[in-house]
Length: 183
Ligand SMILES: O=P(O)(O)OC[C@H]1O[C@H](OP(=O)(O)OP(=O)(O)O)[C@H](O)[C@@H]1O
Ligand code: HPA
Image (cartoon, rainbow, N blue to C red):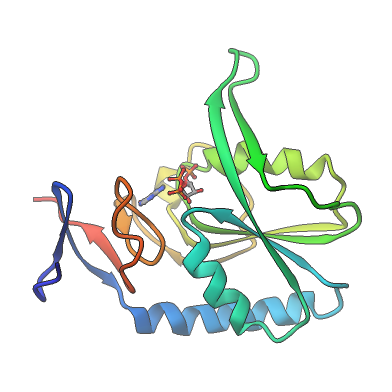
């Protein structure tokens, strides 16, 4: 698929953007920051959002040295009424979050719609603290400002694939991140 110049996924061309080495170096730094910030927390609970975050979450979690738990949840979004806007249901969120230190793990915050709709649901469960961690964020695409406490890379408003991120189901297994080639 990779001919040295770029790759094809479905109908789109992509070019190398963030190498596997840069990803892993940055993730080690993020884990060190989390170790420091969560060192006093009692068994912080990492909640990784499926599907995209599964690769990042696995590497980030293994780079931590503090005792911590991890669980994976899937968000299903549908359009509510005009007053409720986007509605999100979390599948697999069956643990008690009361008084827990919870760390949301995302692969990307793009428009912010997902976390904007989901974070209030978590707040309603009264965690002791709620942190958000995202590998990537696209500030120029933000529709809703959402708090991202720790992020790996701030990127322009370009479509990216790889390292868990997909284009129509493909590309998640690429070890690095590629950006769409706009000709
Ligand atoms: O800030 P936003 O514009 O809401 O975009 C971010 C969300 O989009 C992606 O998920 P997606 O719904 O594509 O599902 P996937 O993780 O299964 O690919 C990504 O994993 C985030 O959850
Ligand atoms: O740039 C992106 N790539 C893949 N999935 C995404 N979900 C939100 N933004 C993106």
